[in-house]
Length: 245
Image (cartoon, rainbow, N blue to C red):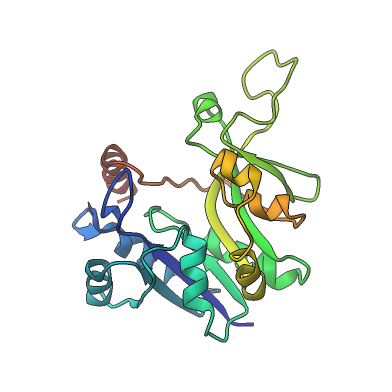
C-alpha cells in the first residue's frame, strides 16, 4: 500500500506573504517541514506542491522533490489532489506548509490508522487542550469526538460547551491540527464537492466531509505543534526551535 506525503507550499499567503520561505534558524520554514516529513517511517515519498517559482527553486535547491501546481487553487487539498491525481498511490498525507515542528511519529500513527482500517477514508490529529486561553481562542480549532474516536464536529468556538461547568476545561476539549490522511480516491471525490454551508460559515474545509455524511477518524496525540500564520508567530517559532535544540 503506497503512501505519499505532500506539503502544499503556498507563496501568496494573505496574512504573511512568502511565509513558507521565512527563515527559521538559518533555513527556510519549508525545509524544516520537509526534513521532518522525511523522517516518517511510513511515507514512501515526500513531495512539495508549489504555486510559485521562488518556492520551487528553493525546494529543489535543498534536495526536495517539488512540483509546480496551479496558483489559483482555493485550498491545500485541491493543490495536493492535482499532484497525486496521476500517481499510483493509495494513501495521501497532507502535511501543512506552515507547521515547522510537525512530529514524524504523529504522521506515522495517522498512516497506520488508515492502513489498519480499510473502512477509514480520512483521518486527522487532535490534542487535549490544557490551557483555557486556547479553548477560548478562535484561531485554535476545536474538535469533539465520539466514543470510537470519530469527529463529531470542528469549530472555532469553544466546544463542547459545558452548561454547568464549575471550572474551565472541566470537560475535555481537543485542539485540531491541520494534518490529514486520505485514501487517494476519496480525496479526488472530496475536492470536487461544492463548499458546504458549515465549511463556509466556520472557514474549515474538513466540515465539508462531515456535512456530506462521511466520517473522519482522529488520532489523539500528546505532541504539540504550532502554525506560523503571522510574522509574530515566526518569532515564537524561532524561540521554540532554540528550546528544542
